Image 1 (cartoon, helix red, strand yellow):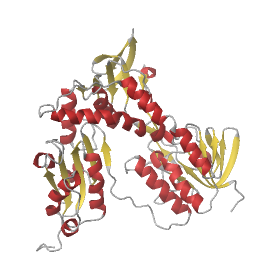
Image 2: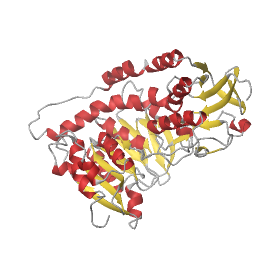
Image 3: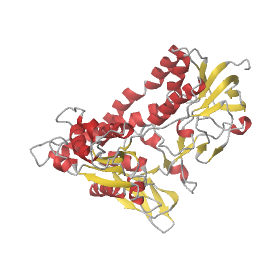
Image 4: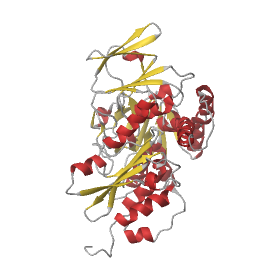
Length: 456
């Protein structure tokens, strides 16, 4: 081993980095961070945390609508500027709090852009530091189409910092970001248009539940245009014109680029360290090592099939720490619960509905209409539903849930999948009643593998 400044250097301070750093520090390793932006990364400062704060009141208003004809008499108005004050009061202090937590734990945070000099040396601003192991945890950035007028397009980071909302917003792309913000902003009275290059939205989720979300958004006044390729954005007085190759022209007040995210690899000089990467991110092996053995990659910057989420970044960060400490086992992901925070939610874990329907010889797909059958447990959300996927031995291997409460319920579903729970195991578990988990699990249990079934 060489005489290095640190045992481990993390490039980035988000969830893909600091969780594992704490493990390494506990094992006596010398650890530092390189950071060019706010401590804590995108999720903490510009993404999920801020979105969740603003989504909370919108979710409540959406839920209240189900009781308007059942005795609830109220007129609620959503005030965006006031909620933005609430957002800033809660989110703005987090970067300093994260800095205090990390420095208090004994870590040095070196500020500046990081560039590799070689496999063990990184230049951070004007300072060169060396480390035995390096973890790249730089995340992703919002991608804008390379079209005329792209300078008029905004990102999700910017929309979460608007002092006042535009009257009309146009989303380019119909993925998670567009669908979530369309659901949120229509609660504040914003008129919205969604333009999508392909023939459908949220392709990774079932078309049935996606279409239900689209129908609700259309009822709220959202316009959808599919199979339309945006080719330019023009300024027209105080407005903007979003144009497509087919001749569609949408006049709008604000344009959000939501055509995906790209890995933050530019400017790192990865070639100098021999690190291989593609347009999809950094290539890693089963131990999260890059093509250079002492350099790891974690989180959204990795080229991977597993969902790019805060929890998976944390999972990878923790795993990499154990790998550096000598863990001989390759990383093994459990079923990952993931949620689209539209109104209502779509949540999924394990084998997807699209995959199951395409492989009927391997999977059985069944519906559980829990909202219709148990309205008292599901707050009168009668269209709430689960699509569950069983393998040929009747073990639960996947599920997709539709409903306002799906985000919490999918966590229990993931536990059932990962634990390969049988009917008897479910019967041996007592859930709180009346609760959402109780209702779903009671209806799911009879479908599951039983040790006492005749053919088992």
